[in-house]
Length: 323
Image 1 (spheres, rainbow, N blue to C red):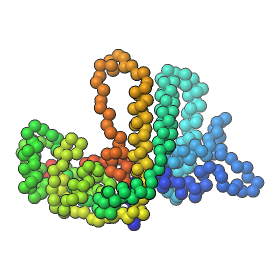
Image 2 (tube, rainbow, N blue to C red):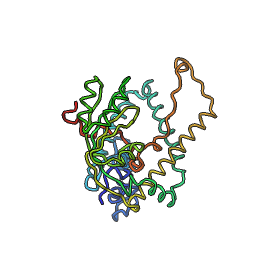
Image 3 (cartoon, rainbow, N blue to C red):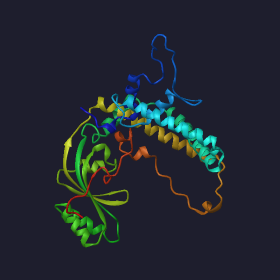
Image 4 (cartoon, rainbow, N blue to C red):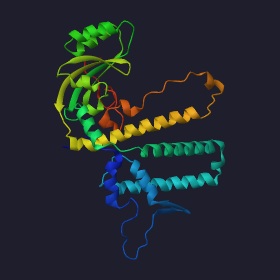
């Protein structure tokens, strides 16, 4: 079974490419008479290393074994241009300007903070086989009973007195066109969308409701504080067996555990630190902190990225005749 591309975390998919090209660490055997080097180019007195190229390559998307060599050359050219521009900036003493110095310090702070949180995350225990097995069994809508859905939806802007009437319309309507006409008659604002969504790209709190629908069913749901009227046009079974799902679940559970651990660490650091708000900011009420993203995201998709709402841009825009 061919998995959708979003199922594979980037570092899993790119590793074979790096290994096949022999660019991950310079550990391959060098031809006789050649000296092993990690230098890819010299720009005046500055060296650009293979390691720098690999760092950029590892963050690149859509790199395959066939395109990796070209990608490496393009990355090297960009690094050369960056080095030349940096050298000129230093020559003109731009590195001493207040704005540049502030930006450099901000970047340093971000890198150090990220390094600390990544260290916390990496120290978390890996999920056990029992945890993975239990997760697979507890979420049939994502695995054993996984489906691909063709959906229509109306995302309605809430307004006073609209909810009760909308529920009545959904209960008796046979198409979204009827509901759209009713919304227009009430001057209600809404957007219409239609598209195909995998189970893992439907918000987790909404998925069981969609999974229980039959072709042609219309249902009113709340998502993100806005009413959504969903019609299931069709669905297709696309199950994932436990062996296929295991690495995805392992990655998701580890990510989930890491996010919880880093959030807990930051909470503890805030509680023990001396933090004093001054100036105008001190009068601004604090915003309630949301729960960690991985807890509310669709599990398999969260191994690579968080779930998107149904009305995300990757849906085909517009349901003809509804607007």
